[in-house]
Length: 235
Image (cartoon, rainbow, N blue to C red):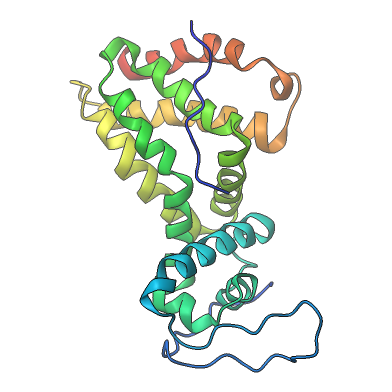
């Protein structure tokens, strides 16, 4: 077997219920000009030349907030404060907190979406190994591991976050893998294969149970890939 392929990942305040969506032209509260290290927040909408950078900055802040606090304790106001913008801009670009989370999840899953064709285009008897290498590679890469941890922790504790996770994983990957299986229980098989890999990720990277937590990645692939393949095509 070749080494574990690590896909390229993206560049890398507690609150209650999400705030209502204000007009995006609302201004931010004044900040004290004499306070050291405090930059005034952006007021209203940025110019077109600033839009892309502002959106990316908000997403970066959202990933950090969700990672540190989880879905329930993250607020749109907290994301805005971390990004240095008014909360109206967060709503303008993304809408509700759920939509911000979904956008952050999509960014974190971008390597999966880029690498899925290598899985889907493989001969059917190799799909299990390629799927295992792709998912394990994402967790092995520190750049992609951090947002994945945020997603998993939030999805475990919050049904809204879990729903976003299910929609993305099921729609973008599992259903397409199931579409290659000429079997009556194809979707169940694809989900069992995914469950095998998610379970390993939870034990190795989230809970960190030994000896799995420190086992060689290639050894894990050699042991797990045949099991994943068995879920997909076995009897």
